[in-house]
Each structure stands twice: as structure tokens, then as C-alpha cells.
Image (cartoon, rainbow, N blue to C red; front, side, top):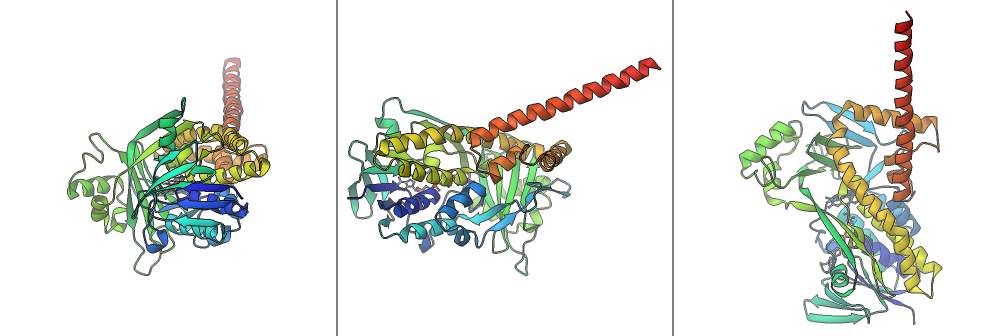
Length: 441
Ligand SMILES: Cc1cc2nc3c(=O)[nH]c(=O)nc-3n(C[C@H](O)[C@H](O)[C@H](O)COP(=O)(O)OP(=O)(O)OC[C@H]3O[C@@H](n4cnc5c(N)ncnc54)[C@H](O)[C@@H]3O)c2cc1C
């Protein structure tokens, strides 16, 4: 009998992992608490669109669905910075103009991965099944369904059920020494819309990720295939100027007029959007271990939710699928060893990504507005072109390569020490020479 995996959660990673496991010949039952997204039940509570880059695309390629998934994606070649006066500054993501990140609709991508999984006859998907508990000794998951409670037994249960994972909660309750840490940013997020222009076209540069950096907060916008942009405001929950203190339509209008004057004329539904759309929270989850014997494993946000500022949460979750698949291939008869190796390989990288993602919030909301930031990016691109394969900017390593996140962060720190140490030494030398010449005369 082939091994039977029970997967909890058919979000982005759940669908893709089911396809990988299906291809390897396992029996797979994928359970999702929501209704089928193809029936119009958009995945609520997360962003409408996301940026997919090299790691995510690689994972889709391995299963043969990259072209299908990316057919409607919109390439974004760099950051378009909007300052308060409405002036625009474009900074490309890389010295190579072909390197771009891609804006992709969450619902369409979710459907693509689920359908890829369903092409394998050994994969079955069950919607409207909410997991409420897992028995680790017997790999049995308990569900709430419309018809009542249900228990399903497999050989292993994989929690791909997102940042607020029920499988992980069971592990917290039942496994001795399970380490768990969650931290919330003081900022929340709210999605808003810039609709298409009267002729159906994009009202701002289509091939860019737009940023309105305002020091302690920011708004971003990603293009959609229908000519619209989805904007996300990242703002403090509390404080004198915050979600909490902005109560009336007048408050909202005044805040947007002051901070994003060039965007307001493009946002006819601003007040309704602001009132009706939920304010989401931003959490980083770190836990260990991500598995229990050969019975339970965590993957994607369930194992390592990160804040969205590097655009890597889904990319990392897709990379998890590739690594877990490789580990299962390496140890076909020892699932515990496969789970252990997957955890060893991914944990330090997930931790490194969590730190990078928080750091990039400060860069996006504060530093992108400055001349110094643009000069640093130009220097990065100059060094990358001058020293091909030797100098790689951190953003390039994270976004356009599959260098493990921890290695990328380590290498960037070393590069910074050499480059900025070198520049500092050079400026000291030049100042000393100048002083020497002045004294000599
Ligand atoms: C505002 C925002 C913007 C983002 N932008 C980007 C980006 O640009 N690029 C990027 O790479 N990442 C981005 N991310 C991160 C990305 O959304 C996540 O990393 C990704 O969705 C993780 O996939 P997942 O499958 O692990 O979890 P999810 O996509 O959250 O899927 C979990 C699934 O499990 C189901 N589920 C939950 N509980 C249960 C239960 N008890 N029983 C059964 N099913 C259950 C849920 O309904 C859901 O379908 C962003 C996140 C946010 C919040």
C-alpha cells in the first residue's frame, strides 16, 4: 500500500505540495476549511495579489505549471517611488533589466495549484473540512464538516494551514518542549483599489511596484491584469495618526490628501474601501521542531509565517515543497529522517528570512525615499556589473537566485563590510592626503 498523506489546508503551498506528493505516487487527501475557490470564494484575509519571483517560479517549473500560472502575471521591473509632491523616482530591481518580480492574483494561482494536484488520480481534495485536532500517535485528523464531525487516519499529517495553523496548535499542546514564538508588528494593513482608467488601461506605470514611503508607514500598489492596482496601506494600529484614530470619512480623506495626494484622484472608492475592507495584522511565527516522528510535519506559513515586506512568504513556502519532495525522494523508506532533514535544511533559512522581512519594512517605508538609498542601489548595480558573479546585492540574492536565505544574508553582511570598509578607508586616505598637501603648502 502506498503511503497516505493527509494535508491540512489547500492554500498556495497545500495545493502545490499535493501535486508534488501526487507525482511521487503517494495517496494524498487534501482538506480545506473553506469552500472551493473556483466557486467564487476568494481566499479571504490575505492579499489579493502577490509578487512571485525566482524561488516560487522554480517550484512551479519543477511540476510543469509555471507557464500556466504566469500567463496573466504582470512583470514589475523596479520600485516606483511616489513622494509627497507627486514626483516619481524609478529604481530598477537589478542591473539586468530582464530580472523582474511578477504580480500574480492569489485566487488564480490557488486554483492553478489545486488543479495541478487534481490531475493526479491519487490526489483527492475535500473542501469545507475544518481541522480541529490531530492525534500524532495515529496520524489521525479530526474535522468539522457540514455533516458533523469526521476522523480521518493516514500515515502522516502535513499542516499546510497557514499562519494560524490548527496542526501547529495541536503540536503546541501535545509535544513536550515544542518551541513557539509569535511576534506582531505595531502596524496593520488594509487593501484599497485603484480601478482601471476609462479605456480599461492602467492609470500608473504598469510594470512597477509602486511605493509611497512616509517614514513610519507606507502604501504600496501592485498591478492586476484587469487594469486595476491593489494598494495596501501599512499603518500603525494605535497612536495619534493611526487606524484607531481615523474614525470618520473626513479623517480618512484628510489623511490621504495629506500623505498620498497623487493617488487620491485615482481612488474613487477610497472611502468605501477603507470602511469595508478588514484591517489585517502582520505576524512572524517561529517554532521548532517542524515535525513529530514520521507522523506530522509543518510547511509554509504554518511553520514560518513572515511579514510580507520582502515578498517572499509564498516563495519560501513553495521552496519548502521542493525541499520536502527531495528529502522524501532521498529517504523513501524513512519518513522521519526525511522530515528531519527537511527541517534541518529549512529552519535557519526561515529564521533568516523572518529577519530580512522585518528589516525590509524599514527600508521600504523609510529609506526608499532618500537620495542615499538611490545612490546605494546605483553603487550596488555598478558593483554587480563590474564584478559579475562576485558581488551580488542582497535583494538580488533573495529575489533572483535560489541561494539559501541564511547564506544570502551572511554574504551580504560580508560584502557590506568590504565595500563600506573600503570606502571608509579610501575617504580617510583622501582626507589625509588633502590635509598633508594643505600643511605642505
Ligand atoms: C498582505 C500580504 C501580502 C503578501 N505578499 C506576498 C508577496 O508579495 N509574495 C510572497 O511570496 N508572499 C506574500 N505574502 C505571504 C503569503 O501570503 C504566504 O506566505 C502564503 O500564502 C503562505 O502559503 P500557505 O499555503 O502556507 O498558507 P495560506 O496561503 O494562508 O493557506 C493556508 C490554507 O489553510 C486553510 N486552513 C487554515 N486553517 C485550516 C483548518 N483548521 N482546517 C483546514 N484548512 C485550514 C486556509 O483556509 C488556507 O486555504 C503576503 C502576505 C500578506 C499578509
